[in-house]
Image (cartoon, rainbow, N blue to C red):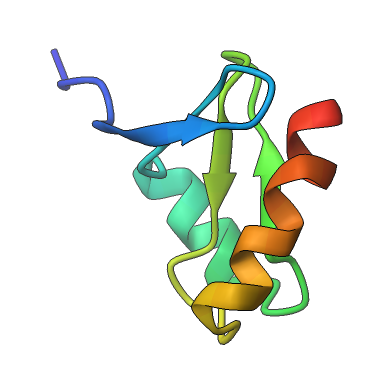
Length: 67
């Protein structure tokens, strides 16, 4: 059995951000235009290939959290 991805943090609105599963990493690798997504488990996953700087990522959090 595979361990669940680690929770990285809490986004505005109480939404958890977690590490991506291997299949999600593959998705982000194929889709560099996607910065992140709301996962089926109710958490947010951000692309490990994202080129945004920290201030840009902080601006995304409220938008993602409102899903």
